[in-house]
Amino acid sequence: MKPLSEQTVLVTGAGRGLGAAIARAFGREGARVAVNYRASADAARALCDQIGPNARAFCADVTDPDAVAAMLDEIASSLGAPDVLVHNALADFAFNGDARKGLDTLEWDDIAQQAETAVGGALNLIRALRPHFAAQNFGRVITIGTNLFQNPVVPYHDYTAAKGALLALTRTAARDLGPLGVTVNMVSGGLLRVTDASAATPDAVFDLIAAQTPLGHVTTPDELADAVLFFASPWARAVTGQNLIVDGGLVSG
Image: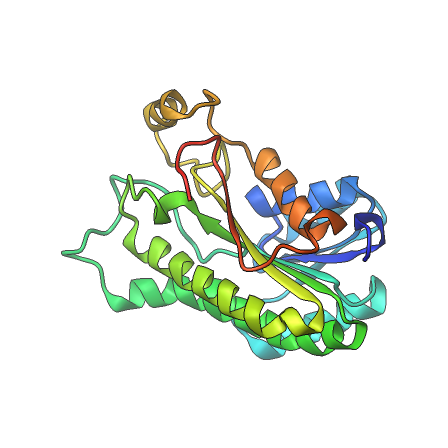
């Protein structure tokens, strides 16, 4: 088993928001951190400067298998091949219930756009990392989901459908990769206070969620990031195919 301080971790969509918080959490524990970004170059480089010399920024669109392969070659040559994949990348999306598409205007392309990054990106990354995982008989894959599965308080149909498909892939991949010493799990948050994606959410919604949560506050990106560390740590070595909800107790699994 590899402790966090001996791991190379790839976090997709890590230039900002939750991904950045996850990258910082691994950096705090001494891991080598590959910060993937698609468009947030300046933010990704600034994050690496903040984390320290064990972090590097890598540009790639995870929906492009060739770009993923090239990125992994770059990571391997500078930090070492990734032992841990945290698939956080999200297609452009804003959590604004007033501006969301309802079923009367939603089109399949809306769902497909979200799924291409959530599910297609995960597939590209897992396929590319599989030979390395098999060679060392070790690997950790952690996907990012949502508690909207359990409580679609705002029916973001496209986003939730894509994340639901990602949960299915998480569980089937756990079965397929288990014999290689690889665990595959999901961490699902609720609305986070605050990321770029949730910045469009009115304060009244945050306050309403906080009032319904046993802990009395809306989960932060840093709090969810700490839960991601668990699945990469030796303490989670016998846990796979699971979906851990980190939302202060707002919903149950």
